[in-house]
Length: 292
Image (tube, rainbow, N blue to C red; front, side, top):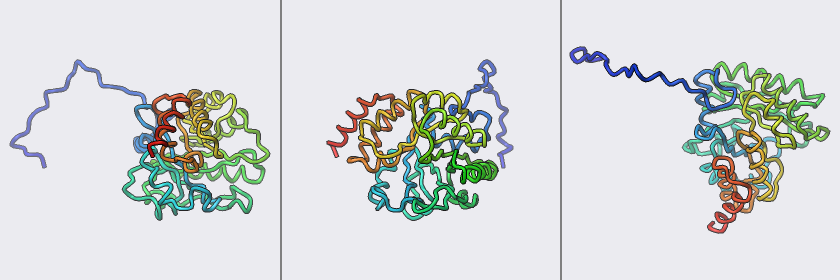
């Protein structure tokens, strides 16, 4: 209760100063509820509007692939350098310290492995995602896959329905099949379908004409690192994507399979947030590698 004996009338209203009306710094999020904006703000740095996500969800279809044999030894030391981490609920509970204080983009669908037909997935219970305090949910879309396209779009659509109810953003992740062209026409189609079906963020691949993919997508796009590249090549990929409109990167193998993973993620961070060129980023990587 307020102390009524010391009730003072407000006087400092600063009527000559207009109330600040600021646009939200994340593309397509201006009209979202406060809770969704708050969660997106955890993922995307408010100073740059960009993010460096560390992905280590590969094991849900690939098992203990190179670099992910021991999460506690290879991934845990890298978390401090990421803006956000992307993983499965099993690894989150078993191997990620609860005091890491990083926003979680949770891999929210699963069902098949590399030994069978990929993307025949079901979706996590939204209540479990809430219990894990996730900042976003990631759902795979197999656009162009005749057997899985409709099911994966339905997975996204239904996840958006449930997640929006609790103020949790959803990231649509575009899968690339062996028969699908890695070009701007395909990635533009896949990214737009993600956004049209309610995704607040899209994860896709960099390609020639990437600026068209970004322009045609009304929500932020983060690029996947994909297969392991040489460090300079991976940093050049980051630089070109950022210059052409990407809102960040979601990298896994190009970080944890690097010769110097901690140096690599710090170099990626500098390219994304500080505007370093690929050459400058590689120089920083080399210096940090030598120090370690």
